[in-house]
Length: 86
Image (cartoon, rainbow, N blue to C red; front, side, top):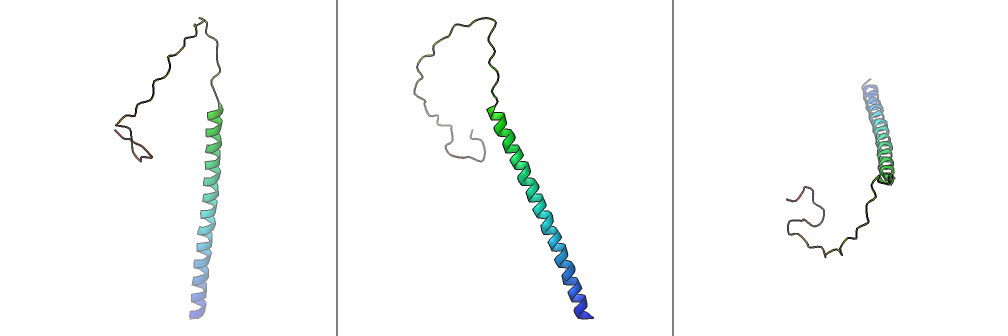
């Protein structure tokens, strides 16, 4: 009788663990599908460009002066920062 109780207890624990594992896999698959959908949406958003509409008032094309060499600011952090650098 003791062996049967131990066997039944172990079997119940095994079934519960198996169900938790299946639930975790389902959640992981849903998460992957959601991430894929978001990634595809982000790429689609990047590909969209606003339509160029001709202005009612024609603007003369202006030439920009040659760009000056960029100066590095002492307040700008290099690399990847977890928080904004001020």
